[in-house]
Image 1: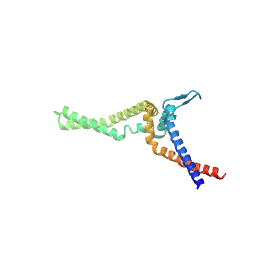
Image 2: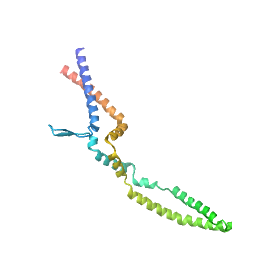
Image 3: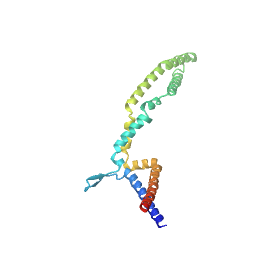
Image 4: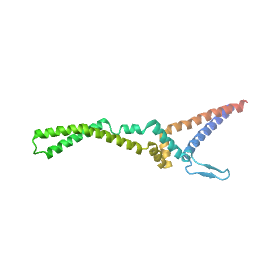
Length: 200
């Protein structure tokens, strides 16, 4: 019975050590935010994320741009064929209203012919112009928009406390599993140590 108590005590101690070690290790990912210098050992302690924030921001920006959201995917959806059709129809309707207003004294037959003629011009000439304009706009947008740089800047602008909150919101459950796993592993290691000390 005495041996079982010893094993149990070692298991509990092992579990606590495993749990506390993992909790501290997780905290050290984010803390300390500002470097702490230890003069005797000539070392500097700083959290992994505060230390490598710029590198993390660069890598996240690059991964998002390469794997998830390319500039081509964005520009492909800026102006669709439906949008072009809407623009042409809008111009046609507006032109018709203007002609009816400005040519009110002109006989309706002539007014109708003029409207049809202008509508055909809009359909051919304006459509082509819109296509060219869209291509130019998309080309300019592609040169101007840098997804990697935008994401990188946004992350770098974040306060380290805000960044910590965001990361913890995403991976809180997984980090909790790591802490519990430390407890379980420490507990079993404590049992093995207890068995070794008693029987060997």
